[in-house]
Length: 584
Ligand code: ASP
Image (cartoon, rainbow, N blue to C red; front, side):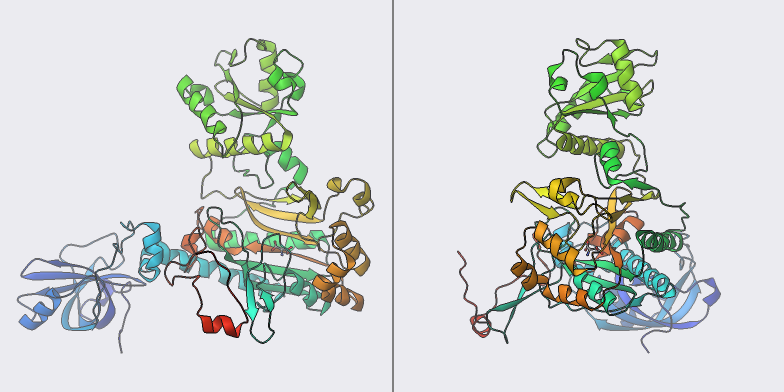
C-alpha cells in the first residue's frame, strides 16, 4: 500500500493517527536540528516533520538528502503543528515521520513547480509533465474534465447517443487544409484526417440515430494564429426531425446547464441577433455584449459637409467611449497610433470630446459646428464626459477596424470581466462568402448548409445576398459553437455544389456517398458543434486555450516535448511508396 491518505486530506481530526503518504517533494527546509518537507500530490500539500530528538540519525540524514521532486513514501503519526498555516486545508497538522522510503530520485526541474513559475511557455511545454504538476495547469485539466462530464450528463439525459466516427477518412470541407495520412496498403493513396465529423453525423441521421453527439478531435491544417491548435476538440451534435428552433433550444439548454453547474451562474434566455445587425452594431459576427459601445453610423450626419475624407467614404462610423473625455491629448494621439498599426490598418481617426458643460470639441472643428457634433453624440449615444471615436472607409474594413478599437478600449476600461457571461445567438449568416483570392464564392459555413426557405432562386441573381439557416453561439466575444440546418435532398445538394463551382463529376467523386445516402430516405436534420477547448477556457475565465489542453502544440504546430513532426526513415518512405522532394 503506497498511501493510506492523500496529501490534501489530513486535518486536526486525524491527530495521533498513523498514516502512510506518497508524493513529490515540493521543498525541504533544513534547520539543522529540525527538518520540514512539503509533500505534494494531486490533492494538496502536507508538511512532514523530522527532528533530532524524535528521529533517528539515519532518518534525519535521509531527509537531508531529499531533493526537489524526489518521489517518496513516508509513514508516521499526524500531530498538531506548532505554527499553523490557515491558507491550506492541511495547515493545522504535520506528520512526524518514522519511516522514509525514496521511491525515485529526480533531476533538478528546469523551472520551479510553483503557481507562479520562472519557466517560459516553450520550456514548460517541453517539460509538460512537470508543468502539469503545477496548480494552474492541473486545475485547468480538472476543470476541463468537469465540463466534459457535465456535457455527457446533460446530453445523455436529453436522449443523445455518443457515437464515434472514424479519423482516417476523406476530405471534409470546413474551409481549412487537410492533414493527410498515406496508405501503405493502397499505394499512392491518402486518407484525410477529419476537419470535423460533418458528413458522418449526417449519415448517422440517415441511419436513424436521431440525436447524436461526440466529444471528438478535429484536425485542420491552418496557419496558426495565436491561440489556435492544429488538433482541437469539438462537442459535435446533430439531430433529425427538428427545426432550427429545436436546435437552438437544445444547445442553449446545454450551455445554460454548464454555466449553472460549472460556474454557478444562472443566465436568462439567450438574446438572438441577426448577422446583419451584429455587423452593423458591433462590426463583428461574434460581438461581446458584456458592454455597450455600439456603433453609430454617421453617414447621414457627417457627410455633405466640406470634410472630404468623410464625403468620399462608404461608411462613417463611431463609438462613444465612456469617460473618454478624461484622456489627455497625448493619450488620444496614442490611440490614433494604435488604430494606424498595420494589424488594425485604419488611415486615421477623428475624435470628438463631449465636455461636461454639454459642449463639444472635435479634431475636425473646422468642418463641423456644435449642432453637427451634437448629432454625432446622439447617434453614438455619447454622454457628457465621453469621447467619440470615428473611423471611415470601405464598409467591411472600417467595421473590422472599429470593432478592434472597441474591444481594445473595453479591455483597457476593464469592461471585459471574466466572471460575467453574456451568451447570444447570431443568426441568419450569409450562405456564401466572396473569396478575393480565388474570385469565387465559398460556402460560409459548409456546403451542406441549407439556404433560407425561398432563397434558392436568389442564388442565380444575387448569390451574396442569400441567407442561410445557420447560427453561431457566441460567448463573451468568442464563437463557441456554430451549426446549421442541412440540405437533405439530393437535388438541392447537387445545385449547391454546382453554385460552389464543383462539376458534377467532382461533386460525385468527393461527396458521392452523401448524395447516394440522400436517395435512401434522409430525414430533415441539422446540428452544431461547440469548440470545447475555447468553451472550457472561457468558462474557466481565461482567454487562452493552451492551459486547458494537456499536451498542446506551439505556434508552429510543433509538439516540442515529443519533437513532432519529425522525419521518417527511408524504409518507411519506401513502404509508403513516397519520395521526398524537400529543399534542405
Ligand atoms: N461541422 C461544423 C463545424 O465544424 C459544425 C456543424 O455545422 O455542425 O464548424
